Amino acid sequence: MKAVYHLPGLFEFAELYRAFLPLFRGHREYFYDWCDIGSVYGAPADCLWGGGRVGFGEDRPEETAALLREYGISARLTFTNSLLREEHLPDRKCNALCALFEKSGPVQNGVILTSDLLLEYLLREYPGFYFVSSTTKVLTEFDLLEAELKRPAFRFVVPDFRLNKAFDRLNALPDALKRKAEFLCNECCRFDCPERRACYENVSRRNLGEACPEHICTSPAAGRGYRFSDAMQNPGFIGIGDIRDVYLPNGFDQFKIEGRGLGSAVVLEFLLYYLTKPEHQLRVREEIYLDSSLDLF
Image: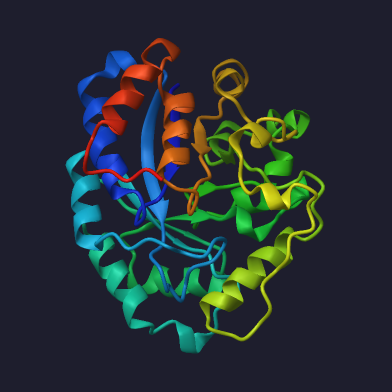
């Protein structure tokens, strides 16, 4: 089995991927042979159906679709707004994105979503997609996760990161359900956070244009922002050793890397850590940083 990574920034980091993907395809000796890239996910700025994170991406959808098509990588639209109503479904921008990405090439593209209302609409109107159940559902009870994994509409389900190490239950799943589990590796949110669902719903309301105060994170480390070094200390963190030595041998091969809105420089560190052999990380970093077309900060 190979670890298949799902990377952030479909509409934010096209230039980073435009520099990175030729290295990944042309110099596979720089990278672990037990991993591959399955998809790049995200939502553009001002996306009504967006959720989870506020979208900042401004990259042209046509160019992004063409880039991933060139490298045979799936694109995933992140439509994780949990508060959608019927009147939101005809949104022109979101439907135009669906029309573009549903038939963008030989590799099937997908949609990550939270709302069952949106799922029913997309199944009817855009059946060419595959669908991913989002971690923004905050299914922290394993029985609820298992029920979600059994839903035939979903090709993959991203568990809440607090179930990442529930190996007594995870390893007992049948192989077909193991292959549907896609683990969020590098979450920085505190492990005992009681406000995760409220945080996601706040983003959903803001994307709908509703007047609401911004959610204030109460984590003691909130003022630091995202730091990969903090994420590595999280009890739910999944490192490369975990993937290679624990998850893959037990039949789990799908892994999601968080990073929308964090900036290209941080995402590059994820690409180096999760994909790149240590002895080649400096070489890859130099190739990216010396690309004069990139603004990594």
